Length: 457
Ligand code: NAD
Image 1 (cartoon, rainbow, N blue to C red):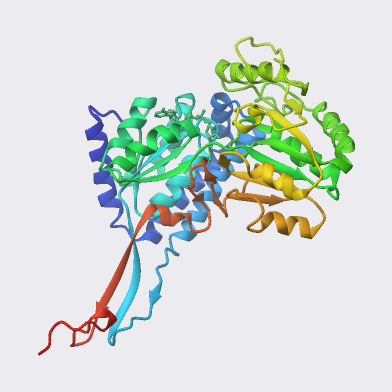
Image 2: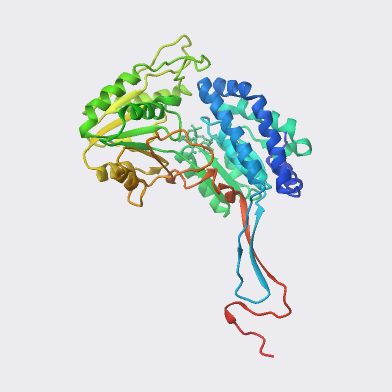
């Protein structure tokens, strides 16, 4: 679908939404179920497109399509559960009720590393709630967006325009953010992107739903099951070649088990299979770009000048010289280095010893981002402290699981510079609707709230 102007694109989306919002929500849900069924039918093909563009290994690419399918199932059920509360009115013969109405158009800006799932988080909820969507995918993953759009067009009947794709870079994203016909901008990507785009939306008092960068940590306590922990840490830190927002970047390990843990961790890292992500035996594919590789190397160069122990991190040569495969890096530090405070979107895991849990929790929280966190322990007092208000300050807090690999049923997102947004499960659907508080008087008098008297007669 080609548009002559940005306005034409937005108007088409607006008209599509006007038609769609008239369909009862459970009927919208049925169309989303059809969409999910078609994703199921084409799961392997879609996963291949993800592997080709985002360079994810086969299993993770299939997992991503599964996540989109799960979202369709979730949204189909949700379409019958867009509940509003009814409150007792203080006035006789009055009813007080909350109604949820669609917002209109949702502008959806997505990152390269979850090129289908993040769209599904947004679209599945937004659509059953009665909205249309304009999707600006990452320039690295336009083929993923095209493949999804084709599937939508196949099941959408008269509602093909409910999903419109806006390919491009910063300029296109900025145009969406400035357009006051788009009540909600849902943007996933770096914190820098969020800082640039959010003011454009708030300048017109629009809403944002921000899913930005993370700097996630795990705390490994002295009672932890070390074999389980090493697997959880490795999947989170090295898996997806360190290119998940929830990637584990910092591990705080209790001094009593530090040596044993590190020995097991190095041994497990040594077994990782790096190579062509379309080969089903590969566990780690390449970085997305030369820029990502250079960013990683620059951080490692700066660390080399410090008193740290670096293992791995170098380029891993494979047949295609244009691809940037790397050995995942482990950096053992004695103190918190500046490099640990930023998100480098590559597989660098910093490891530091601790003796007091409260110090480890402090170090974990003492960064600008607040997405995901984990504790590995068999002591319930430690895990409960971690989950308490004195514990993790992140949107995701896990016990005996790594920081990455969330299920769709929970609300996903993080605090501080991660942006505060929540998408996917739980009641995240409320972000895509406007709340109307309705008071209905079915009596013959007009009593005023709070006992206010106006008409004396
Ligand atoms: P990115 O910020 O480079 O790009 C994300 C999207 O924003 C793209 O569509 C891009 O075109 C657009 N964009 C980027 N900068 C822009 C600007 N200045 N003006 C207008 N548009 C802009 O991110 P990426 O490299 O594609 O993805 C990696 C980042 O995304 C990491 O920081 C990662 O943590 C984050 N991420 C967060 C989540 C989450 O749910 N919190 C999920 C996935 C990725």
